[in-house]
Amino acid sequence: MPKSLLFAALFAIAFASVASAQQPQTVRIRGTIEAVDGSLLSIKSRDGADMKVRMTDNVAVFGVAKTELSEIKPGSYIGVTAMPEPDGTQKAIAVHIFPENQRGAAEGFRPWDLRANSTMTNATVAETVKGADGQNILVKYKDGEKKVVVPPETPVVTFVAGDKSELKPGAKVIIFGAVKKDDGTLEANRVNVGRDGITPPM
Image 1 (cartoon, one colour):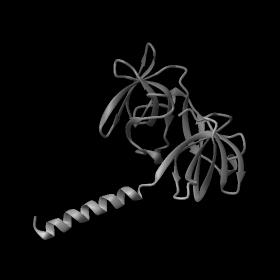
Image 2 (cartoon, one colour):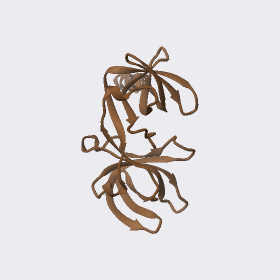
Image 3 (tube, helix red, strand yellow):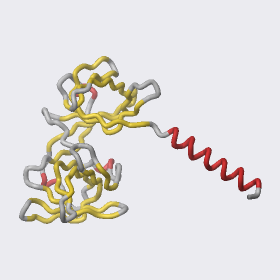
Image 4 (cartoon, helix red, strand yellow):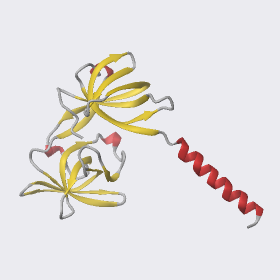
């Protein structure tokens, strides 16, 4: 191998290893705020663990507010927490409607950790038709599409602009990607908090 190609290959390998090392580890947190001390949230996670999460100075707070199934229309950008059915459809456990300025957020289909084997699909609604078991929704994302059945009892929520004053003891929160720092502490630049006593269902 010519020396120049060898150096190029070694550089590429070194760059790839540095890039992977720089990817911060993230943690998804669901729980209840127990205490607030300045920018530090003490959270009791859903599995009973005590967690300390420091909010960044520019933290974004979003309320998770109840809405209606009728608000899901063709063109809506939604997130569907679901369980896969034997016929390949996704049976929704919860649906959240993104505001327009969050269109495209985390687009795609992936495993999720709400329940064992649950999934998450963030995608655009292509069509919605009333069916025998609830609303049948076809969603499309950049790599494919999914057929989703939304039973009538499925919680449907939306994200609304929130305020740090909502982060108080007793509030139910979900943090999608708290960053685990080198010293083991957790840091969040976004916190989603249930409005009117709602537990974020996703």
